[in-house]
Length: 498
Image (cartoon, rainbow, N blue to C red):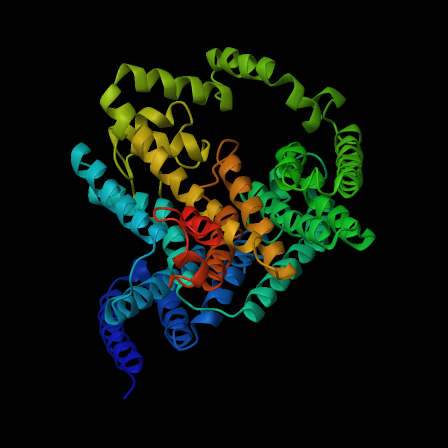
């Protein structure tokens, strides 16, 4: 019998025993009836999905992009339904870990860093005496999508599946347009946060990142195909409508930076193409930007692209209005620095995983959480980098962003490929890592489902592709004739990317 089938059978048996025990314990608890309903109806199909883990990855994407919408807009599902994606992620991760142990898989550098991050998170929690509820909430917020990255990486998916997965993301993105238009008809410009597409209330900024990832993919294709496609520009226009109606300023603010990152290596090789692409996309951004805020109640001086040239004044303004109880981004950054200088140990190692994570599910409550709540600096109220800093300190922030850096460097392997599609994927991987990293300085990127679902699974598939295309380590004849101590050029590139 196949070893994989034995492992999966044992895992399924253990899980069903635990599931049955939990279900029967909830039968005697009337307050848990809704949760019991969700478990009895939702978990068995998820167990079945473990037989088809590729389908499980797709289902996670569809759940995150629909369940909150069903709950917030239509009220068709109970709040507990939002946990289904977490349960499926947990199952996929457990399956992956079991297979890795059974197969004695050698960890790549990224996976070793994830292990270090987990150990560091536990260390910070023990150091600060974080209670178990806060610990559970903090681990869920910080690591569930990192672990989904791990699970998706080990699915050994084919390039055909990767292409289909990207098409699915495009389908979800284009479906946002009619949904957003319907939501806008109800609230108009009065409540941009209610224009969240299918990602649920609070998912407006996540929708922006979800869409700009696809913009990066389209720009990558134009750069590698050496022509500006009108159809791609039209798609970019369509995908810009939801950010306009939802008031996602950063979507437009980031486009110039995104283009600069993507064309930095092509500028001198294809200057005409780069100039045409830059002019076309920037004109679109400027036009859409002006339309969005000239037709709304916002002042033209508050146009997103104009804010880029006046950031110091807005930073000072955020600090000044804090005196009146309004705590914005500028104040959060300055306050985090002040707190770190006042308590250097916490500044270096943080207050512990979960110490600043607000969660009604886990009933988190602590003096640390209360302290940050007074400034609206908790997990759901501040930028991703500030939240990571409060919980993990400067050392933790460096480790988390080093993980992103390692993923960014994997793009070099794909960019060196002779296959155009693989070079497109390499450009896309670079772009989405930069997008996600910078988005953490603007909003709660590391904490929200709606933002993470657009990044981690796709990044995992692209990183996996880079390893599958990596040349073998056996020395070539040319390498064997090289001067001792020197690397063959391709081997040097591989070593650097690893």
